[in-house]
Length: 154
Length: 154
DNA sequence: GTTACTGCAAACTTTTTGCACGACA
DNA sequence: TGTCGTGCAAAAAGTTTGCAGTAAC
Image (cartoon, rainbow over all chains, first blue to last red; front, side, top):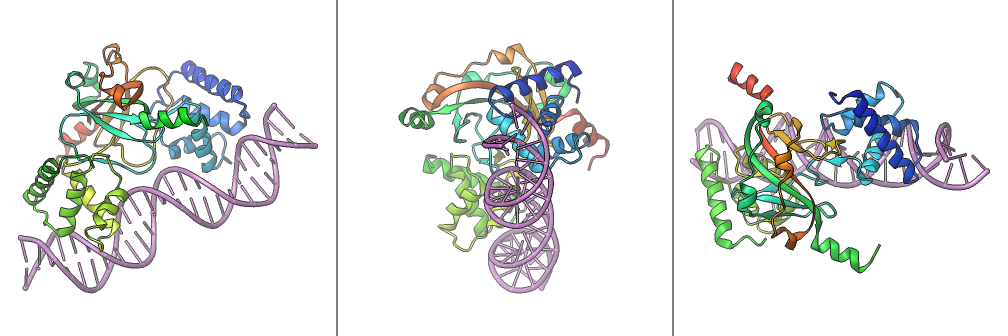
């Protein structure tokens, strides 16, 4: 939790404002979950957020945290890190490559690109640790999902 | 499964050879799981691999697939896509940033870099879909884990 | 013949869901 | 006051583990 207090508060207000704008009720629980995520820079999992919030709201339940986080994610206010929901996926491709990820359906396609292969780790990275690989992730909507969307505007 | 047959076979032999070199027994089950992953380019989850293998080895159990995939991953022959094992993690940082991921402990740190921000999606990506964001992922060993490793060579 | 691997079943973890009560607007 | 959100409990989904029999070396 090294996010400066003012930055955390700013993020939390953005969350609250967005929830209100979308017609969600500003409940005590939602505000506290939003605040907890906002002040964290460790990319926490739900369990961690839960423990943090519970210090201030001892009666909150784990499933409320799950629901609130899902709501914030749906509104695009927080992102699932390297998000492909569901089970762990495996990659047997040992050649240097990058990924295109569809945020709608979870499709992942390999992408070969000498230009992207040239991406260098910035110097600051050395402070964090030893970099062993650099890959680029493109996120967006795949052709299939785009077609579905335009055909039957749900 | 658009991996050409010869490429799939090549990958499968690499898997088999590596298993043997590391002293693992080349069982029927392991070879078939290895082959199934090798011929797939859809970044499958364990359940999918299981279904594929079961067509050829109807008696194989799901947990054997889990164990084999874990073994292959430990040997570095397959990678967990955007791998941070365990629960889903969330990111409240809406500013443009990149990630450093420690493959040992799962630590994720944000990385700000105007240079990385300049990374462009290659033209070929347009064939896959609409790209909405481009982020760079650095994988490696964090300072903490490196220290632990050098102090008490386990 | 040993020992590692497998299949089975059960446990564990993470996440989702149905329902009735309570709180926000 | 009406409806949405919460807490509880149970279930579902994904993954791991102990054990006894089986197969690889």
